[in-house]
Length: 164
Figure 1 (spheres, rainbow, N blue to C red):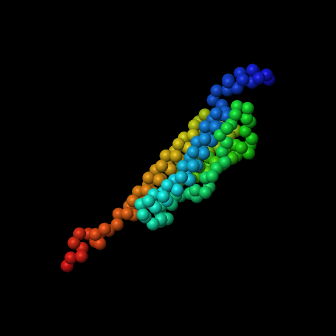
Figure 2 (cartoon, one colour):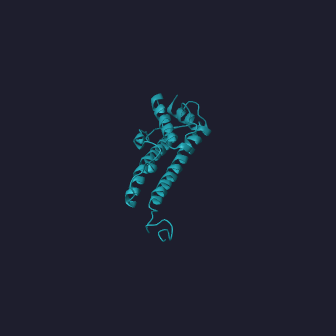
Figure 3 (tube, rainbow, N blue to C red):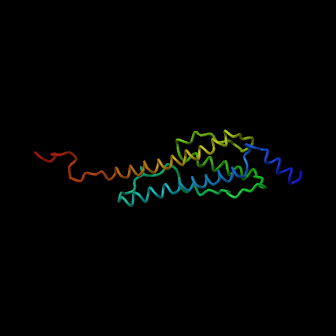
């Protein structure tokens, strides 16, 4: 096949998962993984800034150290992904999915063989859902930290409690 024939063939494959999709999704995976790590850091810093002693209730429900992921965001049109690269790709998606309990029932394919546009869209929706869930998680944990500040400043919980 000549270069022109290959170009014509590739341009006719609308809807195929290609290098631009890989770059977009791997960039999003990197972003969400960074957000998962940053959420833990931000929550801990918020507790410190608010002067609240750390409590296990403030912890994120995953191990942030698991999210130093290897991603490839420079796929090129000529690249042919290997089985190992696609296994890493799927593994990263599974790890991202499993970070947040609400997303843990989202289906991830076992391989990238024969995926269709619905599976591709589901993968990207999962990343959006986890990103939104991380923001909600941070807000919830910060709310817990603020509630820890709601202490009894007057020495009494109820008015007139100490009077006889």
